[in-house]
Length: 593
Image 1 (cartoon, one colour):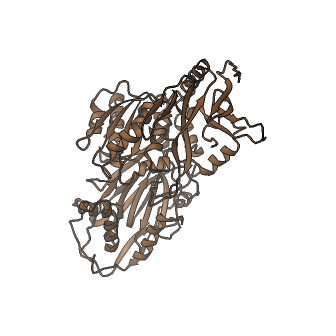
Image 2: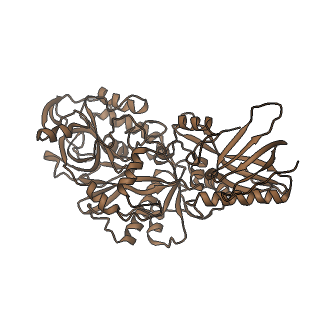
Image 3: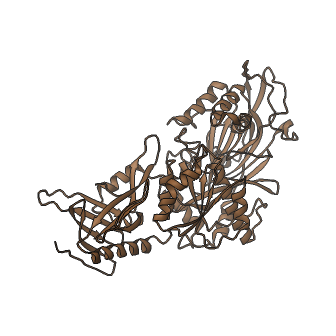
């Protein structure tokens, strides 16, 4: 059958193509590639529409990539690879798979025209796609399969997309960080880490440190305005928990993450700097926890031989020990009119709260590649405000810049936390009896509101300070070694527990946070009636901090990941149903045959 070809200024191409011996009417516009089966016996048309931005590659002949690459070189055929979505049981996001369709043309000339136009469309409409990546592989993390995951699943996809890589298999801790700090990074579009959260933390510290070195910013200054990193960071999950990947993509799947990297997705991410005095201690993006979470980490380090099971064991032992700690927390509240940790919203792909924060932080930025010249001024203004002080005895004090969701806690530590709004969520769990605390912990594994408890409060903040209170002020940190006697019955000082808006009422009345006396009866167990330490430690993204008294500041959108946030399953389904009328602003949905 004679093919009909039409070219326009927007690179539109239209002709008849064959898919599995079925004739289809194929159309390429600037934003979509669509083919519809021609069936004279029925008015129903089986149609598939793929956004050009989600085309992974176009190859001559009949090509297969996974699990092994095979090529059947034919003059009139070409193969299109693209993103194909499916639901993931037990996950809050969508799995991405490599879709593949082979097309046959009436002539080689038409075949070459389709290949040329598709490749031009992809290059034109996805300018942020990486061309050269620096890849770090941690062969020791998780189940020690990072090298196998990269070479069998990820490398073939990068090759298909025309991405060149420089691969470094790390041999020691902090090797990736040191490389990023010292080596020449010219020509790299981004950095990819294959491993767990620890490997990501190394890359994060290296990328931020390198950027501040080149900008002349002093990281040890607690009040410094850090410069956003120009290099994107990609995460191929191969660790034990992969919390950052889960919270930014919604699934823990190497192929899904690799496809996000290939198409050049860009997700800004807030970062929390942690200082002790005038010295930088670490950066954090997921969990900064004192009390219960710090004790669990210390206990788990004693049982590394148990593997991942050590976290369950350590958590149980620490819970039974029923520890609590005195301290003074100061925080700088964020604007409650912008968002709230109790508003029951989720930070999903295209989040409006994060988008408004981008406009607020970078009002003069016209594209994601700019250096955000006005960032410093607006970030400094954001730190102005009235600090709120609370003092008392806590089960745990936590700060997170994201929901910190994972497979075992689908809603995370703070379900309504945002990835890129320039704030963190401060969770204060006051001293309470073991059954109440167990209820709080259990709600992390369900959909119940863990903040709807009288001994829990949450605040959306821009900065936090923590110091020891009372007679523990001068005590040095020795990891769970300095012990004291458990009193038969003690008085605990605790602040008001009226929730995250308490500081607004205080400001209106001109009153400081009041304290009240509450009696707590210690819980003892024959297994865990050890003498508790007067102080705990900070758990910073899985690392123990050597200091107790710290100051923290949230740096809005300091880094960018090759991700797009968690996709809304309902929105994707709706977009698929409306595929025939969607325009170029609808880049996420597509229908399946």
